[in-house]
Structure formats: structure tokens, C-alpha cells
Amino acid sequence: MIKRYFNLEKEIRPDKVLIIYGPRQVGKTTLLENFLSRTKLVYRLESGENIRTQQIISSRDFKLLKQYAEGYNLIAIDEAQNIPEIGLGLKILIDQNKKLKIIATGSSSFEINRNIGEPLTGRKRTIILYPVSQLELLNQQTEFDLKEKLEDFLIYGSYPEVLTVKRKSLKIEILNELVDSYLLKDILTFDKIKNSKKLFDLLKLLAFQIGNEVSLNELATQLKIDVKTIGRYLDLLEKTFVIKRMGSFGRNLRKEITTKSKYYFLDTGIRNAVISQFNKIDLRNDVGKLFENFIMMERIKSNHYKRRIGQMYFWRTYQNKEIDLIEERNGKIFAYEIKWSEKTKVKKPLEFLNTYKNSTFKVINKNNYLKFLK
Image (cartoon, rainbow, N blue to C red; front, side, top):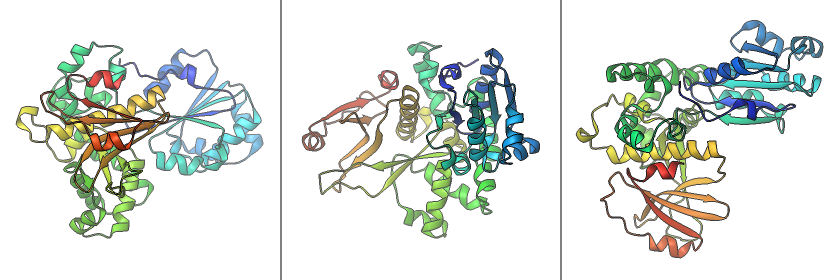
């Protein structure tokens, strides 16, 4: 059993809806069921895929909803994104009983946000459950053991099911099934996209460009579709937890590029499955990019779980001076360069440090990365 970071006992509040969302197959249902198996609360567990549940929650019938929740301390709804106008239904439930606790899980920020929207403004708490993080694994394994498995994390990623099997052929089988059957399912279903081939071709192009600035015009030209469609696909891929966009940082220097973005995959195993590339690290020419993708996503997980509030960017000038990661939080700027090998020499970005006086700089490599992710 992989112990996840969140303790739902501490997260739920009366008069608030706790929303747990994230990619499919990362353990949201397991997290919920483990909590319910231990709680002393009297609860009702429902699935958003149940037609009767959809009818009741969407009904706006005050009397029916009050009867539905009567006698329970907690209402838990799994796959809540399937219930139309669920936000209004949950608001009515809370209004009817101020002591009622509600948990809703969903696999798409796109659909959850669209359905919950304004009705629960100020009445909800949100947590994202990602593929298993290094931060979580550090609670069960030593730093030495995790570093020994770093190659596997880069190649096969951190989905729970992938981590719990030993055979590499089975890991690959699970990842291919995730890509084929789950990750694209939300987009193709929710936004009625019919051209799944173009969407998958876009993912392939992004897989070869991790760590590089992405031009929407170039993507549109290569795929022979218009730029607006590319933008819409990228937005949906991010909202359904396949990729993560990172914008560029800039405040003072006229030399800074601030209009382009980079895209990382939420999980390196998924990235490798998209391009069918599972070779060992010493047989690859993309280990630096893989490590960068891995560190970016692990830092995002760590920041979210630790509730370190701030913004993440990259930085580059027209003279090709570049910093992989800029974090801005608490009025300070932290700059990080990510290098696979600790032997790679990295010069201090003096232009950046002199321009942004409240900034610091550090190099992250395969020797010190776990301290960075704590």
C-alpha cells in the first residue's frame, strides 16, 4: 500500500465541499475508500455514473435532496464530473444542513470546474491528487533507495499501478493501456472531439519538445490544422491532466522573451508511452529532458501538497540565456537550473541575478534533487 500525502480526516470541513480531482487511475477512489473504511462518520457513498444519483443531485428539489442526505454526516460522490450542474445540487445540500460534510472526486478539472462553477464559490476546498510523488515515497523509503530507482521513475513514471508491479513488460502494458483507454477518454468524451488521431499526433510532437519553447504556429503547420484548434487542444490536454503548461518570466529586461510557453507531461511514463520509447537511460539521447520533466512535475506535486503558494516560470532572453525554472513566492525569486549530471558546469546567471536583486540561484541534479523536492 502506498500511503498518500493527504489525510482526508483533516481536509473535510462542515459547510464546505471537499473536491478531489486529478488524472484517471491515480488513486482518488482508493484514497476515498480508505478514508471511509476508517471514519466513524455515518456516510453515504455514491457514484456519479449512477443514473439515479445524477437525477437526485441535479433535481434542484429541496425536499428530495434533504431526504437524500437525512441521517448522514457525510455524503461522498465518486466520479462527480458525470453529474450535470452538480455544483448547485451540492450547494442546496449544504444549505439544508450546515453540519453536513461532502466529498466529491473527479478526473477532469475541465468538467468539474464547468459543473461546479459559481454555485460553490467560497464553499469549496480543492486538492489535486497526482501520480505518486517522491515526497510521498520518502515517507516509506530512504533517499538512497529512491535514488537507486531514479532510472525507473524517468522511464516508467509514477502511476500507482505501475509502481506496484515489478516486471518491466507489465509496466509498459499498463502505461499503454492508460494512454489508449483513459487519458484521452475525457477529452474525446467531454468536448466531443472526433479527430483523435490529430490529438495523438499533437501529443507526440509535444513529447519530442519537452523543455523547449513551443510555437503554436509550427504545431499547426505540422499537423495541418488551424492555430485556434491547436490552442483548444492544448488547453483541454492540460485540464484533463495530460500535460502542464509553463509560461515565461519577465519584468524588467527588454531582452526577455515573455510570450512563449513550454509544456511538460504530468508523468514521464505517459510521455514515453506516447512515443513508444522505453529504452534504458544509457541508450537514450533524451535523459536530460526526461530528468527536467521529472523534476518540474515532482516540484509541482511537492508545492501543492506542502501548500507552498507561488508561481513557476522559465526564463530566456533573445540572446539565448536561459534558466529552467523560476519560482516566485513570498516576494522572493528563486532560480534553478536542472542538470542530469552533477559534473555539468553551470555558470551563474549574473544578468538575471543583477536584474532581480531579491533572487537566488541553485543547480538541481541527480545527487541533490530529493532535498529540493521535500
